[in-house]
Image (cartoon, rainbow, N blue to C red):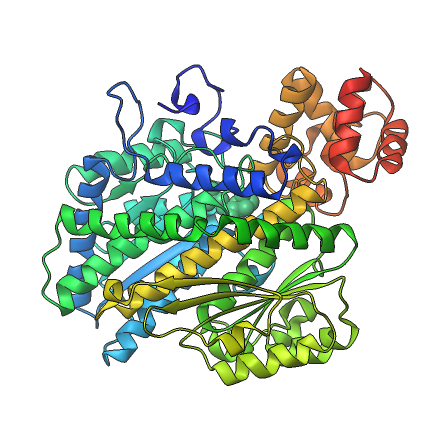
Length: 592
Ligand code: F6P
């Protein structure tokens, strides 16, 4: 049994908010150590329940597999009546981005078969949130319900996947609530990684229920197959609470498995069985092994990315097809996760908006954050690119290798710091002449026998493998830059209620203060005042998070105040003297 599975381990926190014992010292590890810890953390997704006394069901547990089978059969039923039906995937942040990726890729499959494209996605904050962090809509249950209602108008049957890794997002709760009140149309599936009894109980704005009550009701309805809860435990995140990592990967592979089995039942007449679903999951476990078998090369990329960020350089991902989307997603997550500047890590995809199939179309007029094509990169970034910047190409043997080679030569004129993550197949490899254009080529050659007749599976695996590599590179680089303290991202932006609660929890943990003391210090830091006014004390969490959104170093400032008993002004000057947050926090905790 893992340490975090014991009942006494951080008992007040749900699994997704616990700290992972594997990564306690990740902030002091070298690139090889970082990658090894991430490998172990990700491996927890595939761990089996071997101990009878484990309180948690895992991805491979019979109960979870049976739920997946039942949902796949619903997918098959929906596919039989495409005129009247819809499959909707929805979530906030990374969960919404995964929803988008899955909906668009299964729609592409249907289009290739000349079938109706019955998938739709919803992301809190709309399509802008695919590329930038829009945290506040996550707290709005009515908005979630409204968006779902709009998408489903006129449909007779809707299979709805509400994804919230922490079983916590009010936006998703609002949608599930709508479904439960309209079960003649909706079959809701709640996807997350906590047991139902750990779902959030906090009251929500203008909402009659809470997440846990909804999850409990869904569990109850599961007995009649009217609703489903798909919630295996995959262990705490490598960086505490950062559900972009394991949460995103597990959502992706679990839902791909469920949807693929449903599609194969419909179009290939392959029966949906527990063994079939289990085999698909085991293939993803193989992808994990194959990807991390390259850990030395991956660590070298982490090292280079760390050097670039520390030297105020940048990391650019230039990707093709969905690997480009994985790059864009990874880059966009660094802003809220690490308080990174938007220029620090950026992703680009070959033809920009014309190939990502998002609902709202071309957003490039919305500003620089939305310049995402290779042309944009060549026009805006290339002229000022230097060896201080790192460029990573993301492509497979199925992409236009002439295009890859031309762009690589072009980039190579300005920087030698150019690398590639390449996927190919035995018997169909990327030629050495292309690989030779890069300083490092992390090349994974996959067995073609795995993918006969199942090219969608191949894409899914290459995306997941790329996600693991990029998560390691961007997380590792920020660790090396000193953004992480132990395995906590202490300088997070407190932009919604979940993050507000997480911030208070961290302050309590590191300073041994009470909840009230921690919240008071946090509010002083958010509002930049030495004493709280009546107006501040009586404002609600939404107001606090809106104000916090504009401020830097909110949590570290509160931490220094609590730990040393100093004023806000003194805390600020302590932080100014230590530009590296990890050192500032460590120095302050040592001092006291
Ligand atoms: O709001 C911050 C955040 O934690 C994102 O990083 C995450 O992707 C999103 O919330 C959604 O979280 P969940 O899937 O647990 O609802």
